[in-house]
Image (cartoon, rainbow, N blue to C red; front, side, top):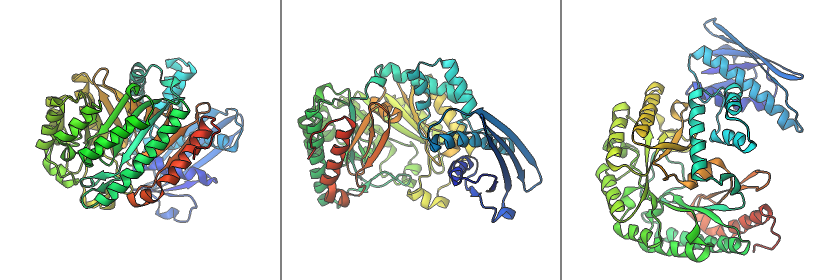
Length: 505
Protein backbone atom coordinates (compact mmCIF):
# COMPACT_ATOMS: atom_id res chain seq x y z
CA UNK A 1 0.00 0.00 0.00
CA UNK A 2 1.43 3.37 -1.08
CA UNK A 3 0.06 6.55 0.50
CA UNK A 4 1.04 9.96 -0.84
CA UNK A 5 0.99 12.73 1.79
CA UNK A 6 0.54 16.39 0.84
CA UNK A 7 0.45 19.53 2.98
CA UNK A 8 2.80 18.47 5.77
CA UNK A 9 6.15 20.22 5.52
CA UNK A 10 7.68 19.00 8.78
CA UNK A 11 9.46 15.64 8.33
CA UNK A 12 8.72 14.78 11.95
CA UNK A 13 5.20 13.82 10.84
CA UNK A 14 6.54 10.97 8.70
CA UNK A 15 7.18 8.48 11.50
CA UNK A 16 3.77 8.71 13.25
CA UNK A 17 2.06 8.52 9.84
CA UNK A 18 4.11 5.43 8.98
CA UNK A 19 3.35 3.73 12.31
CA UNK A 20 -0.40 4.34 11.98
CA UNK A 21 -0.34 3.24 8.33
CA UNK A 22 1.29 -0.01 9.46
CA UNK A 23 -1.74 -0.70 11.66
CA UNK A 24 -3.91 -0.98 8.57
CA UNK A 25 -1.60 -2.43 5.92
CA UNK A 26 1.03 -5.16 6.15
CA UNK A 27 3.36 -3.29 3.80
CA UNK A 28 2.75 0.45 3.88
CA UNK A 29 4.92 3.07 2.17
CA UNK A 30 4.59 6.79 2.81
CA UNK A 31 5.50 9.27 0.04
CA UNK A 32 5.85 12.82 1.28
CA UNK A 33 7.68 14.55 -1.56
CA UNK A 34 5.17 13.90 -4.38
CA UNK A 35 7.82 12.17 -6.50
CA UNK A 36 5.81 8.97 -7.12
CA UNK A 37 2.28 10.23 -6.52
CA UNK A 38 0.96 8.56 -9.69
CA UNK A 39 1.85 5.15 -8.21
CA UNK A 40 0.02 5.83 -4.93
CA UNK A 41 -3.07 3.88 -3.90
CA UNK A 42 -4.38 7.03 -2.22
CA UNK A 43 -3.48 10.71 -1.93
CA UNK A 44 -4.03 12.39 1.43
CA UNK A 45 -4.08 16.18 1.54
CA UNK A 46 -3.73 17.89 4.91
CA UNK A 47 -4.43 21.48 5.90
CA UNK A 48 -3.27 22.61 9.37
CA UNK A 49 -4.23 25.87 11.08
CA UNK A 50 -2.76 26.78 14.47
CA UNK A 51 -4.09 29.78 16.36
CA UNK A 52 -5.92 29.35 19.66
CA UNK A 53 -6.80 25.88 18.34
CA UNK A 54 -5.02 23.21 16.34
CA UNK A 55 -7.31 22.52 13.40
CA UNK A 56 -6.71 19.78 10.80
CA UNK A 57 -8.66 19.20 7.59
CA UNK A 58 -7.91 16.02 5.65
CA UNK A 59 -9.13 14.72 2.30
CA UNK A 60 -8.29 11.21 1.05
CA UNK A 61 -8.72 10.39 -2.65
CA UNK A 62 -8.07 6.79 -3.70
CA UNK A 63 -7.13 5.57 -7.16
CA UNK A 64 -10.69 4.37 -7.79
CA UNK A 65 -12.05 7.91 -7.54
CA UNK A 66 -13.52 7.66 -4.05
CA UNK A 67 -13.12 10.58 -1.66
CA UNK A 68 -13.20 10.66 2.13
CA UNK A 69 -12.73 13.66 4.39
CA UNK A 70 -12.56 14.55 8.05
CA UNK A 71 -11.91 17.52 10.31
CA UNK A 72 -10.46 17.66 13.82
CA UNK A 73 -9.72 20.54 16.13
CA UNK A 74 -8.51 20.89 19.70
CA UNK A 75 -7.69 23.85 21.90
CA UNK A 76 -3.99 24.71 21.85
CA UNK A 77 -2.53 24.10 25.30
CA UNK A 78 0.22 26.24 26.82
CA UNK A 79 3.68 25.13 25.75
CA UNK A 80 7.28 26.10 26.47
CA UNK A 81 9.34 24.23 23.88
CA UNK A 82 8.99 23.63 20.16
CA UNK A 83 8.78 19.92 20.95
CA UNK A 84 5.66 20.49 23.06
CA UNK A 85 4.16 22.69 20.33
CA UNK A 86 4.81 20.08 17.64
CA UNK A 87 3.44 17.28 19.82
CA UNK A 88 0.02 18.93 19.86
CA UNK A 89 0.05 19.20 16.08
CA UNK A 90 1.17 15.58 15.77
CA UNK A 91 -1.75 14.32 17.86
CA UNK A 92 -4.23 16.36 15.81
CA UNK A 93 -2.79 15.10 12.51
CA UNK A 94 -2.76 11.50 13.81
CA UNK A 95 -6.38 11.83 14.96
CA UNK A 96 -7.58 12.98 11.53
CA UNK A 97 -5.36 10.47 9.71
CA UNK A 98 -6.64 7.48 11.71
CA UNK A 99 -10.26 8.61 11.34
CA UNK A 100 -10.09 8.83 7.56
CA UNK A 101 -8.18 5.53 7.21
CA UNK A 102 -10.82 3.80 9.34
CA UNK A 103 -13.56 5.16 7.10
CA UNK A 104 -11.68 4.20 3.92
CA UNK A 105 -10.78 0.64 4.99
CA UNK A 106 -13.72 -0.18 7.25
CA UNK A 107 -11.22 -1.37 9.89
CA UNK A 108 -11.61 0.07 13.40
CA UNK A 109 -8.40 0.35 15.40
CA UNK A 110 -9.47 -0.39 18.96
CA UNK A 111 -6.32 1.22 20.38
CA UNK A 112 -6.91 4.36 18.35
CA UNK A 113 -3.81 6.38 17.50
CA UNK A 114 -1.70 4.68 20.17
CA UNK A 115 1.34 2.90 18.78
CA UNK A 116 3.42 2.84 21.98
CA UNK A 117 3.93 -0.13 24.29
CA UNK A 118 2.32 0.99 27.54
CA UNK A 119 -1.26 2.28 27.24
CA UNK A 120 -2.05 1.89 30.94
CA UNK A 121 0.54 4.56 31.80
CA UNK A 122 -1.94 7.12 30.42
CA UNK A 123 -4.58 6.03 32.93
CA UNK A 124 -2.08 5.93 35.79
CA UNK A 125 -1.26 9.59 35.11
CA UNK A 126 -4.90 10.49 35.64
CA UNK A 127 -5.04 8.42 38.83
CA UNK A 128 -1.90 10.07 40.25
CA UNK A 129 -3.33 13.51 39.39
CA UNK A 130 -6.56 12.71 41.22
CA UNK A 131 -8.75 13.08 38.12
CA UNK A 132 -12.15 11.42 38.04
CA UNK A 133 -12.54 8.18 36.10
CA UNK A 134 -15.22 9.80 33.97
CA UNK A 135 -12.85 12.59 32.92
CA UNK A 136 -9.98 10.16 32.36
CA UNK A 137 -12.02 7.83 30.18
CA UNK A 138 -13.47 10.74 28.20
CA UNK A 139 -9.99 12.07 27.44
CA UNK A 140 -8.70 8.66 26.36
CA UNK A 141 -11.66 8.22 24.03
CA UNK A 142 -11.74 11.70 22.53
CA UNK A 143 -8.03 12.45 22.24
CA UNK A 144 -6.69 9.02 21.39
CA UNK A 145 -9.76 7.35 19.81
CA UNK A 146 -9.41 4.33 22.10
CA UNK A 147 -12.60 2.24 22.15
CA UNK A 148 -14.70 1.64 25.26
CA UNK A 149 -13.65 -2.02 25.20
CA UNK A 150 -9.95 -1.20 25.55
CA UNK A 151 -10.55 1.59 28.07
CA UNK A 152 -12.44 -0.92 30.23
CA UNK A 153 -9.50 -3.34 29.94
CA UNK A 154 -7.09 -0.59 30.97
CA UNK A 155 -9.24 0.33 33.96
CA UNK A 156 -9.47 -3.26 35.19
CA UNK A 157 -5.71 -3.65 34.90
CA UNK A 158 -4.92 -0.41 36.74
CA UNK A 159 -7.29 -1.33 39.57
CA UNK A 160 -5.70 -4.78 39.86
CA UNK A 161 -2.20 -3.29 39.90
CA UNK A 162 -3.05 -0.85 42.68
CA UNK A 163 -4.65 -3.66 44.70
CA UNK A 164 -1.48 -5.74 44.23
CA UNK A 165 0.95 -2.86 44.88
CA UNK A 166 -0.96 -0.22 46.90
CA UNK A 167 2.17 1.90 47.25
CA UNK A 168 2.97 1.78 43.52
CA UNK A 169 3.33 5.54 43.22
CA UNK A 170 5.60 5.73 46.30
CA UNK A 171 8.25 3.24 45.15
CA UNK A 172 10.33 5.76 43.20
CA UNK A 173 13.12 5.67 45.79
CA UNK A 174 13.48 1.90 45.55
CA UNK A 175 14.76 -0.10 42.56
CA UNK A 176 14.12 -3.43 40.92
CA UNK A 177 16.84 -5.61 39.42
CA UNK A 178 16.80 -7.44 36.08
CA UNK A 179 19.49 -10.09 35.64
CA UNK A 180 20.02 -11.22 32.05
CA UNK A 181 21.45 -14.66 31.27
CA UNK A 182 21.85 -14.86 27.48
CA UNK A 183 21.81 -18.62 26.88
CA UNK A 184 19.12 -21.00 25.60
CA UNK A 185 19.09 -24.59 24.33
CA UNK A 186 18.17 -23.20 20.86
CA UNK A 187 16.91 -19.85 19.57
CA UNK A 188 13.19 -19.59 18.77
CA UNK A 189 12.24 -18.29 15.31
CA UNK A 190 10.30 -15.29 16.70
CA UNK A 191 12.93 -14.27 19.27
CA UNK A 192 15.03 -11.09 19.27
CA UNK A 193 16.21 -11.28 22.88
CA UNK A 194 19.92 -11.79 23.59
CA UNK A 195 19.86 -15.59 23.38
CA UNK A 196 22.67 -17.87 22.30
CA UNK A 197 22.63 -21.65 21.99
CA UNK A 198 24.53 -22.81 25.07
CA UNK A 199 26.03 -26.00 23.63
CA UNK A 200 29.76 -25.67 23.06
CA UNK A 201 29.96 -22.29 24.81
CA UNK A 202 31.19 -23.31 28.26
CA UNK A 203 34.16 -20.93 28.02
CA UNK A 204 31.85 -18.03 27.23
CA UNK A 205 29.49 -19.10 29.99
CA UNK A 206 32.28 -19.19 32.58
CA UNK A 207 33.55 -15.75 31.55
CA UNK A 208 30.05 -14.34 31.49
CA UNK A 209 29.23 -15.63 34.97
CA UNK A 210 32.44 -14.06 36.28
CA UNK A 211 31.32 -10.69 34.89
CA UNK A 212 27.81 -11.16 36.21
CA UNK A 213 29.05 -11.86 39.74
CA UNK A 214 31.23 -8.75 39.51
CA UNK A 215 28.26 -6.59 38.52
CA UNK A 216 26.14 -8.00 41.32
CA UNK A 217 28.84 -7.26 43.90
CA UNK A 218 29.39 -3.67 42.73
CA UNK A 219 25.72 -2.78 42.32
CA UNK A 220 24.85 -4.49 45.60
CA UNK A 221 27.55 -2.54 47.43
CA UNK A 222 26.23 0.74 46.00
CA UNK A 223 22.68 -0.12 47.12
CA UNK A 224 23.87 -1.01 50.62
CA UNK A 225 26.09 2.06 50.95
CA UNK A 226 23.26 4.35 49.88
CA UNK A 227 20.45 2.57 51.75
CA UNK A 228 18.42 1.93 48.59
CA UNK A 229 15.97 -0.97 48.85
CA UNK A 230 15.17 -3.57 46.20
CA UNK A 231 11.49 -4.17 45.36
CA UNK A 232 11.84 -7.14 43.00
CA UNK A 233 14.50 -9.24 41.27
CA UNK A 234 13.87 -10.90 37.92
CA UNK A 235 16.16 -13.44 36.23
CA UNK A 236 15.48 -13.41 32.49
CA UNK A 237 17.38 -13.93 29.27
CA UNK A 238 17.70 -16.13 27.33
CA UNK A 239 16.72 -18.90 29.70
CA UNK A 240 18.31 -18.57 33.18
CA UNK A 241 17.90 -22.30 33.81
CA UNK A 242 20.18 -23.08 30.85
CA UNK A 243 23.20 -22.91 33.14
CA UNK A 244 24.02 -25.81 35.47
CA UNK A 245 22.49 -26.36 38.90
CA UNK A 246 25.88 -25.64 40.47
CA UNK A 247 26.18 -22.35 38.58
CA UNK A 248 22.65 -21.42 39.61
CA UNK A 249 23.45 -22.19 43.24
CA UNK A 250 26.51 -19.93 43.17
CA UNK A 251 24.51 -17.17 41.47
CA UNK A 252 21.75 -17.08 44.09
CA UNK A 253 24.37 -17.30 46.85
CA UNK A 254 25.94 -14.18 45.30
CA UNK A 255 22.54 -12.47 45.31
CA UNK A 256 22.13 -13.08 49.05
CA UNK A 257 25.70 -11.98 49.77
CA UNK A 258 25.72 -8.85 47.59
CA UNK A 259 22.21 -7.40 47.61
CA UNK A 260 20.71 -5.62 50.64
CA UNK A 261 18.01 -7.25 52.77
CA UNK A 262 17.24 -10.04 50.30
CA UNK A 263 14.83 -11.76 52.69
CA UNK A 264 12.52 -8.74 52.48
CA UNK A 265 12.58 -8.34 48.70
CA UNK A 266 8.93 -8.60 47.69
CA UNK A 267 9.45 -11.01 44.81
CA UNK A 268 12.21 -13.00 43.11
CA UNK A 269 11.36 -14.59 39.76
CA UNK A 270 13.38 -17.00 37.63
CA UNK A 271 12.32 -17.70 34.06
CA UNK A 272 12.58 -21.43 33.47
CA UNK A 273 10.76 -20.88 30.22
CA UNK A 274 12.23 -23.76 28.26
CA UNK A 275 11.00 -27.04 29.78
CA UNK A 276 14.05 -28.83 28.35
CA UNK A 277 16.27 -26.88 30.80
CA UNK A 278 14.38 -27.89 33.94
CA UNK A 279 15.74 -30.67 36.15
CA UNK A 280 14.95 -31.85 39.65
CA UNK A 281 18.43 -30.72 40.74
CA UNK A 282 17.83 -27.15 39.48
CA UNK A 283 14.42 -26.96 41.11
CA UNK A 284 15.99 -28.06 44.41
CA UNK A 285 18.45 -25.16 44.07
CA UNK A 286 15.56 -22.71 43.61
CA UNK A 287 13.83 -24.17 46.64
CA UNK A 288 17.05 -23.89 48.69
CA UNK A 289 17.14 -20.13 48.04
CA UNK A 290 13.40 -19.60 48.69
CA UNK A 291 12.56 -18.88 45.04
CA UNK A 292 9.17 -20.28 44.11
CA UNK A 293 8.03 -17.98 41.28
CA UNK A 294 9.08 -19.37 37.90
CA UNK A 295 7.89 -19.44 34.31
CA UNK A 296 7.44 -22.66 32.35
CA UNK A 297 6.36 -21.63 28.88
CA UNK A 298 4.59 -24.01 26.51
CA UNK A 299 3.84 -21.25 23.89
CA UNK A 300 1.72 -23.92 22.18
CA UNK A 301 0.46 -27.43 22.94
CA UNK A 302 0.75 -28.49 19.29
CA UNK A 303 3.96 -30.43 18.61
CA UNK A 304 4.21 -29.41 14.94
CA UNK A 305 4.17 -25.75 15.99
CA UNK A 306 6.98 -26.23 18.50
CA UNK A 307 9.10 -27.82 15.80
CA UNK A 308 8.34 -25.01 13.34
CA UNK A 309 9.42 -22.27 15.75
CA UNK A 310 12.61 -24.00 16.88
CA UNK A 311 11.62 -25.22 20.34
CA UNK A 312 13.11 -28.69 20.77
CA UNK A 313 11.02 -29.85 23.71
CA UNK A 314 7.84 -31.89 23.52
CA UNK A 315 4.35 -31.04 24.71
CA UNK A 316 4.59 -33.94 27.15
CA UNK A 317 7.85 -32.53 28.53
CA UNK A 318 6.13 -29.22 29.30
CA UNK A 319 3.40 -30.99 31.23
CA UNK A 320 5.80 -33.32 33.04
CA UNK A 321 8.11 -30.46 34.09
CA UNK A 322 5.14 -28.45 35.36
CA UNK A 323 4.11 -31.33 37.62
CA UNK A 324 7.72 -31.85 38.74
CA UNK A 325 8.00 -28.17 39.68
CA UNK A 326 4.68 -28.24 41.51
CA UNK A 327 5.62 -31.38 43.44
CA UNK A 328 8.92 -29.77 44.49
CA UNK A 329 7.18 -26.74 45.98
CA UNK A 330 7.00 -24.19 43.17
CA UNK A 331 3.86 -22.36 44.29
CA UNK A 332 3.69 -19.52 41.75
CA UNK A 333 4.13 -20.75 38.19
CA UNK A 334 3.55 -18.60 35.12
CA UNK A 335 2.95 -20.06 31.67
CA UNK A 336 2.97 -18.27 28.30
CA UNK A 337 0.83 -18.90 25.24
CA UNK A 338 1.29 -17.15 21.88
CA UNK A 339 -1.64 -16.31 19.61
CA UNK A 340 -0.96 -16.51 15.87
CA UNK A 341 1.99 -18.89 15.72
CA UNK A 342 2.65 -20.35 12.23
CA UNK A 343 -0.15 -22.58 10.94
CA UNK A 344 -2.17 -22.14 14.13
CA UNK A 345 -5.76 -20.99 14.22
CA UNK A 346 -8.79 -21.19 16.46
CA UNK A 347 -8.65 -24.99 16.73
CA UNK A 348 -5.01 -25.15 17.81
CA UNK A 349 -5.32 -22.24 20.22
CA UNK A 350 -8.46 -23.76 21.70
CA UNK A 351 -6.48 -26.94 22.32
CA UNK A 352 -3.77 -24.96 24.13
CA UNK A 353 -6.39 -23.37 26.39
CA UNK A 354 -7.91 -26.81 27.05
CA UNK A 355 -4.53 -28.17 28.13
CA UNK A 356 -3.87 -25.08 30.26
CA UNK A 357 -7.06 -25.79 32.20
CA UNK A 358 -5.62 -29.14 33.29
CA UNK A 359 -2.61 -27.42 34.88
CA UNK A 360 -4.08 -24.12 36.14
CA UNK A 361 -0.85 -22.16 36.58
CA UNK A 362 -1.05 -19.19 38.94
CA UNK A 363 -0.67 -16.82 36.00
CA UNK A 364 -1.06 -17.09 32.24
CA UNK A 365 0.45 -14.56 29.85
CA UNK A 366 -1.21 -14.44 26.45
CA UNK A 367 1.07 -12.96 23.80
CA UNK A 368 0.09 -12.01 20.28
CA UNK A 369 2.79 -12.87 17.74
CA UNK A 370 4.87 -9.89 16.68
CA UNK A 371 7.10 -9.92 13.61
CA UNK A 372 10.16 -8.41 15.26
CA UNK A 373 12.60 -6.90 12.83
CA UNK A 374 15.64 -9.01 13.72
CA UNK A 375 13.92 -12.37 14.19
CA UNK A 376 14.44 -15.36 11.92
CA UNK A 377 10.68 -15.46 11.36
CA UNK A 378 10.67 -11.91 9.98
CA UNK A 379 13.72 -12.49 7.79
CA UNK A 380 11.97 -15.50 6.22
CA UNK A 381 8.37 -14.35 6.49
CA UNK A 382 7.19 -16.31 3.44
CA UNK A 383 7.96 -19.58 5.23
CA UNK A 384 5.66 -18.82 8.17
CA UNK A 385 1.95 -18.74 7.40
CA UNK A 386 0.03 -16.91 10.12
CA UNK A 387 -3.67 -16.31 10.75
CA UNK A 388 -5.64 -13.41 9.33
CA UNK A 389 -6.68 -10.45 11.50
CA UNK A 390 -10.23 -11.72 12.08
CA UNK A 391 -9.01 -15.12 13.30
CA UNK A 392 -6.37 -13.53 15.53
CA UNK A 393 -9.05 -11.32 17.09
CA UNK A 394 -11.23 -14.39 17.65
CA UNK A 395 -8.36 -16.18 19.43
CA UNK A 396 -7.83 -13.16 21.68
CA UNK A 397 -11.54 -13.20 22.49
CA UNK A 398 -11.26 -16.92 23.32
CA UNK A 399 -8.42 -16.12 25.75
CA UNK A 400 -10.47 -13.38 27.42
CA UNK A 401 -13.44 -15.71 27.86
CA UNK A 402 -11.30 -18.62 29.09
CA UNK A 403 -9.47 -16.54 31.69
CA UNK A 404 -12.69 -15.02 32.98
CA UNK A 405 -14.31 -18.45 33.27
CA UNK A 406 -11.32 -19.80 35.21
CA UNK A 407 -11.08 -16.87 37.67
CA UNK A 408 -8.05 -15.18 36.11
CA UNK A 409 -8.02 -11.38 35.80
CA UNK A 410 -5.82 -9.15 33.62
CA UNK A 411 -3.12 -7.31 35.58
CA UNK A 412 -0.67 -5.97 32.98
CA UNK A 413 -0.45 -5.45 29.25
CA UNK A 414 1.95 -4.19 26.65
CA UNK A 415 1.93 -3.78 22.91
CA UNK A 416 4.57 -4.14 20.22
CA UNK A 417 5.16 -2.91 16.72
CA UNK A 418 4.08 -5.30 13.95
CA UNK A 419 1.86 -7.22 16.36
CA UNK A 420 -0.81 -9.31 14.64
CA UNK A 421 -4.22 -7.66 14.51
CA UNK A 422 -2.88 -4.54 16.28
CA UNK A 423 -3.74 -6.34 19.50
CA UNK A 424 -1.82 -6.67 22.77
CA UNK A 425 -0.04 -9.00 25.16
CA UNK A 426 -1.95 -9.49 28.41
CA UNK A 427 -0.86 -11.05 31.67
CA UNK A 428 -3.66 -12.77 33.60
CA UNK A 429 -3.39 -14.03 37.17
CA UNK A 430 -5.40 -15.82 39.80
CA UNK A 431 -6.20 -13.70 42.87
CA UNK A 432 -3.05 -12.47 44.69
CA UNK A 433 -0.70 -14.18 42.22
CA UNK A 434 0.32 -11.21 40.07
CA UNK A 435 3.97 -10.58 39.17
CA UNK A 436 5.06 -7.35 40.84
CA UNK A 437 8.07 -7.10 38.51
CA UNK A 438 5.82 -7.14 35.44
CA UNK A 439 3.84 -4.26 36.90
CA UNK A 440 7.02 -2.30 37.69
CA UNK A 441 8.60 -2.75 34.27
CA UNK A 442 5.42 -1.82 32.39
CA UNK A 443 4.26 1.15 34.44
CA UNK A 444 7.73 2.72 34.80
CA UNK A 445 7.26 3.95 38.35
CA UNK A 446 10.80 3.13 39.50
CA UNK A 447 14.32 2.49 38.24
CA UNK A 448 15.09 -0.99 36.89
CA UNK A 449 18.82 -1.80 37.02
CA UNK A 450 19.84 -4.23 34.29
CA UNK A 451 22.70 -6.60 35.14
CA UNK A 452 24.22 -9.15 32.76
CA UNK A 453 24.56 -9.66 29.04
CA UNK A 454 22.02 -7.69 27.01
CA UNK A 455 20.37 -6.37 30.18
CA UNK A 456 18.77 -2.96 29.68
CA UNK A 457 18.62 -0.51 32.57
CA UNK A 458 15.81 2.02 32.78
CA UNK A 459 16.76 4.86 35.11
CA UNK A 460 13.72 6.88 36.21
CA UNK A 461 14.30 10.17 38.00
CA UNK A 462 12.51 10.04 41.38
CA UNK A 463 11.20 13.61 41.04
CA UNK A 464 10.76 14.42 37.34
CA UNK A 465 10.03 10.91 36.05
CA UNK A 466 12.51 11.44 33.20
CA UNK A 467 13.65 8.10 31.78
CA UNK A 468 17.26 7.36 30.84
CA UNK A 469 17.99 4.10 29.00
CA UNK A 470 21.29 2.25 29.29
CA UNK A 471 22.07 -1.19 27.84
CA UNK A 472 24.85 -3.69 28.40
CA UNK A 473 26.38 -5.37 25.31
CA UNK A 474 24.17 -8.06 23.81
CA UNK A 475 26.76 -10.68 22.87
CA UNK A 476 28.78 -12.57 25.52
CA UNK A 477 32.17 -11.75 23.98
CA UNK A 478 31.62 -7.98 24.10
CA UNK A 479 30.10 -8.24 27.57
CA UNK A 480 33.05 -10.27 28.86
CA UNK A 481 35.47 -7.65 27.55
CA UNK A 482 33.70 -4.60 29.00
CA UNK A 483 31.50 -5.44 31.99
CA UNK A 484 33.67 -3.40 34.38
CA UNK A 485 33.31 -0.29 32.23
CA UNK A 486 29.53 -0.70 31.90
CA UNK A 487 29.14 -1.33 35.63
CA UNK A 488 31.02 1.88 36.45
CA UNK A 489 28.86 3.86 34.01
CA UNK A 490 25.69 2.57 35.66
CA UNK A 491 26.93 3.54 39.10
CA UNK A 492 27.69 7.06 37.89
CA UNK A 493 24.12 7.35 36.60
CA UNK A 494 22.77 6.03 39.91
CA UNK A 495 24.77 8.63 41.83
CA UNK A 496 23.34 11.40 39.69
CA UNK A 497 19.81 9.98 39.90
CA UNK A 498 19.75 9.65 43.67
CA UNK A 499 21.85 12.79 44.32
CA UNK A 500 24.82 10.88 45.69
CA UNK A 501 28.23 12.53 45.42
CA UNK A 502 30.71 9.84 46.38
CA UNK A 503 32.76 8.13 43.67
CA UNK A 504 31.28 4.81 42.52
CA UNK A 505 34.66 3.44 41.45
